[in-house]
Image 1 (cartoon, each protein chain N blue to C red):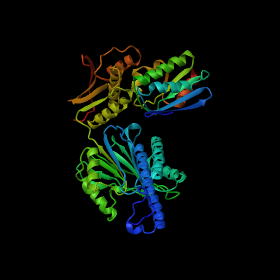
Image 2 (image 1 turned 90 degrees about the vertical axis):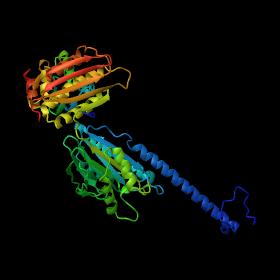
Image 3 (image 1 turned 180 degrees about the vertical axis):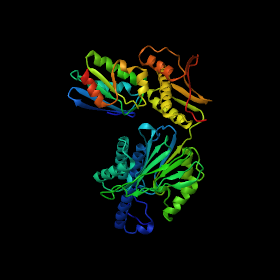
Image 4 (image 1 turned 30 degrees about the vertical axis):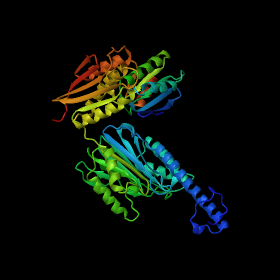
Length: 120
Length: 408
């Protein structure tokens, strides 16, 4: 799925772990749609969702809000929420300032994300 | 007067010497009537083709930060001379734009329809983010698949306003004219591949040329350089000469090029023309944009380009783009309904400090939780000072940040 700014693709690393990889930019013009698109792809039977922001080049507070909303939804269903952001990523500072770590497991790679989900 | 067997009003108007024999008259009359109808049909086809052609071409070219664009399409003056020439400008992700110019071989409605197929396919491939040479390769396959076979020439020029470069690939199309910031002209002769549809396994190469701020790029179809009685080189020489005094404004540049190159004001063949001018980043950034979330990307591209030009590094630039974006999001959320509201963004450098102002024309309302509160908190964390000036006419958010790595 894609719009002018961002593209999201889904994969299942395992039957119960959904990975949503977002490339491009997330802002007020596409954040709400993106949240819907991701939320729709996570069945209540999934054990965990990994949002991979490795190729995301811009995120603002509406994008951060999207992650918080996903976190609320997942936590209500006792699903594990992991966000992948490499340390070198330009968007990492904004995510840290907004304390995304308080609602999601913050990791540096997809592989680490799968391990983290297993450890919980 | 010779009685010719026609009642008044029915008799076709024929020169007398042709009308001696009534039988011959009738045949001739029918033949002329047929010719008249054929001429009418040609005219109908011509105007249908022109309507189709025009409806397919973007009248309003996309807004691309740092790049001004203008384009023209002119039908040819001959019979049914609507030849499927087209231009396009496709904004890509990350601020680049794909400029397209093409020429479908053929005439009339069929050519216009084939052009429509090609135009859509180019857009689709370009939006997939394929590189220009690969787009041409795919387009060649696409042309082979069309029911009405035939060739087409196509040129792609992907302009990167940030890197100040153009990536070019061409399928048998004449080279674009480049006008550098000093006004010198040259043709960007790259490796030229076969026209689309001319071979089964073509290979296309691409070249990257520098396009420093202030440069212009002129894309055109051969109708503008071709004369029935003169060589193509002659036409290109004239084009290059006119380019030496190209007006800064692309729209005026198009007008001058058409005026000077089509001396009789008419194109023999049809003509498509696209002029792009890359602007130097201004000393002060001044933007006024619609109060709509889709404006956010243009503002941050404009700000990002401006910050780069004054020597601000990527990490700091990113943080300022976020801070400014949050202020813009507030202005959009508080815009006075209904519709047509705008807001203004201004950025200036004051010694080693940057000032960014975002002004709207609506009343400030305090953000109520959610991302509004988070946005304001982000601005505070990413800048050194934040002032919110709630005036009667509108609200201005003023952000300052001391710059560390800025060039003197």
